[in-house]
Length: 294
Image 1 (spheres, rainbow, N blue to C red):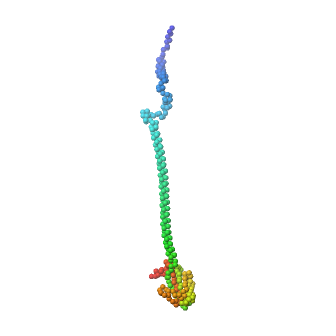
Image 2: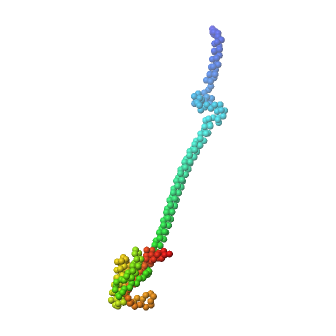
Image 3: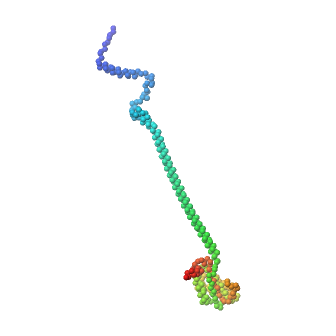
């Protein structure tokens, strides 16, 4: 026996809810009904971006980022970073080159200054050497002149010439000086006070023959020498005497020697040729006196 169950009638509100649930369930059921064998239909969970990754600031590229991928900041930075690194490297290289150039310039300047200082020192040494050479040349010339002068001095040491002659006569062979004889000796000696470079030659004669004449003429010389030493302080070493007795001595004007008839002493004042150049010598005094005469 078939029995038919009659459902209770649905209200309009229930019908609307049922339709809404069916609309929601159909898409869900269709999604679950897709076969899992198609690996390309469903991307892996790792490949699907999460909500946190999509919200990172790097993916917020804006409108122009989606429209022109070359305008993205990340793409621009990828292209500019190597250039910036290269520019930084070039700046460092330029800075190092500038530093090296500065160091080289400093060393070059130091080398130039050192070379200049060395050149100046060498120049000063050369000038000093030139001055020393000039001084040495002057000294050599002075030494040469001194040697020549010394040579002349040595050659003229024994060169004397006669500048004055006095003849002293004695009466009767007595060695006593007369008044006129003393006056002649005083006049000659007055010109010799304080002077050098002269000698006095005394040559005594006596008419006596033999040893008597020699002894008498020696006494005459001693009389003259004694007067010059005691009265005029003539040094003894400047007087040189010889006793000739009655030996005849030829004069420069006579051809034959004259016979000795009186007792006499011939006095010759001799002056050295070098001393004659000095104004303090007897001849120099005489020359100056002659030059001062009107």
